Image (tube, rainbow, N blue to C red; front, top):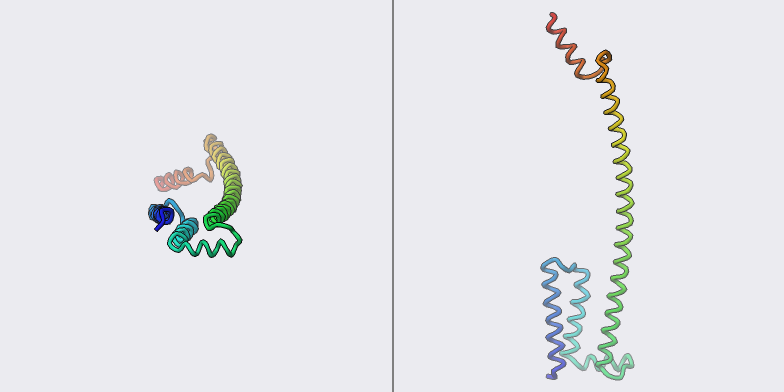
Amino acid sequence: MDGWRILSIVVAGLVLFVVLEMMRRRKLREKYAGVWLIVSVGVVVLAVVPQAAEFLAKITGVVTPSNFVFLLAGVVLALVALHLSTEVGHLEEEVRTSVEEIALLRCELEDAKKELEGRIAELEARTSAPDDVKGLPEADAVAKASSVRAR
């Protein structure tokens, strides 16, 4: 077996091992791991069966099988870049939506704070005037207690 074929199999096996290990440790999600698993299996197939690379090179019009492999690698990398670009676009949209929702929630929180502060100020104003304690829960409780004692 040629040295480049052995090297290809070793590299593909190493990529396969690293991808599986990263998936096991939850460092790589399955939807991204699939691409790398397919690439590593493809490299193993092309290394074990070199006639496949020669056949595919003839079909596509590429002069040498090694040039076909480089072309295939470039296409795979371009597809990975395209996929990652679409993912970045989706993530940007999600971040923008989340920031807008947070801004709306902050506005609602500020409004609720202002309303609560107004209610507290109103309650403090009513309790600071001892003549006007009618309607306060504490005053009603004191009035009931004093009427019970008077009987």
